[in-house]
Structure formats: structure tokens, C-alpha cells
Length: 246
Image (cartoon, rainbow, N blue to C red; front, side, top):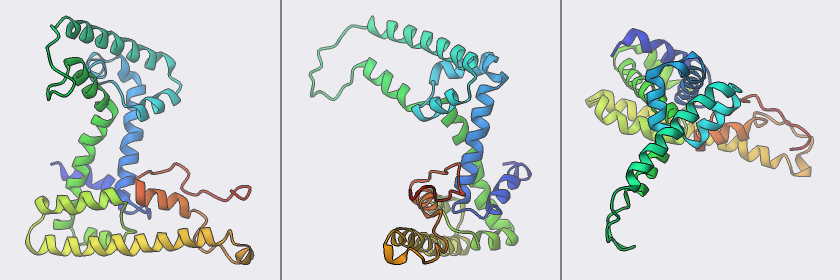
């Protein structure tokens, strides 16, 4: 791993004062992947070979459409559709077996579309880099005391990234390092989940007429932060303000 290359985005994410540094990393990678795909790269033969094969998941094709590069998206969709037509034409020529509805085997076309639905050029690009970022988190925790202190003072993690770090620590760390990491991670998760949970509770309590004149405290953006903690959804508007009584 090229440590010098990946320590910068990891440190930047942990400096961002957010509810989940890993969500910040993932969001940045997603933005970069969308920009890359809708940039000049869509004319690159190697990129088009990959997009023809994998296509895009529903979420990312919506994001690509929102970029308003209609020509670029149209060209990628066209050649991807041509690839699907060729693949399906070939699979349809295979003889149909005598499998019953309840047999274990699947129709080749069913398997083809299941794999296609599960594949996405954007997701693949994000996941390759994100795994390197996670490796860097563990590397820095082992090697850099300043990062350990930064890690211990962050605002915790969303549910899925908490589980990811806890699971990954078993392979990336050992002995005292792993025990300390898990102890710090567990405390960070519960302390900060409780903090956001209290903010969400006060957000709902503010709708009681008896609390109409009470201060909002730190609850105005509680829904945004609660969604991030529970669902790993990094909403663009992290500074959401109340509008029209919601």
C-alpha cells in the first residue's frame, strides 16, 4: 500500500467533524467516480468495455442522469444495451433444460440478469478505493499516535461502518492494538449514537406545544445526522434548517 497517497484523504475525513468519517470518504469517492464517468473517460475504449459489461446500479444511473451529460450517458447506455442484446441472444440459443420450478438449478438468463443487476461500474470503482482507505485507517492506527488520538476524539461512525471497522480489525490488528481499537471503537459508537438519539428525541419533543418556546439546542439537523448514523446516507445538505414547520 502506498501510505503517503492514502493518508491525506483519511486524515482529512477524520478532521471533518462529521458523524462518520468513513461516510465522508465514501461520499468523496462516489463524487469522484461520477465525475470521472461523465468526464472525457466515457470516450475511452477501456472504460466503455467495463461499462458495457457491468452497467450501473439504479442509484448511480440516477446520479449520472442528474449530471446532464446526455450525450455521454446516451453513448454508454447504447453500447451497454448492445452488449446485453448480444449476451441474451447467445443465451436464448442454449437448449432449455427440463428443470422444474422447484429444482435447484437456475435458468441461465435468470443468472445473467441477477449478476447484471448486482454489478455497477461506479460501485466497483468506489469499492476498490474505499477498501484501501479502510486499510489506511488501520495502518495509521498502528503507526501514528496523533491519528490514534484523532480517531478517539471523532464523533463515531454509522452503523455499517462501525461493523466494518470492528470486523476488519480482526485481520488488520492484533494483540494489544486490536483490543484497544475495539474498546475505543465500541465506546465511540455507543456514546455518539446516544448523543444523536437524544438530539432526535428533542427534535420530536419540540413539536409539543409546551416546548414551543424552548431552544432547539443541537437538534435542528438531528434527522440528517440520525439518517447518517443508522443508514449510512450522507445527505448533501448537512446544515439542514427548519422550513415551514416541516
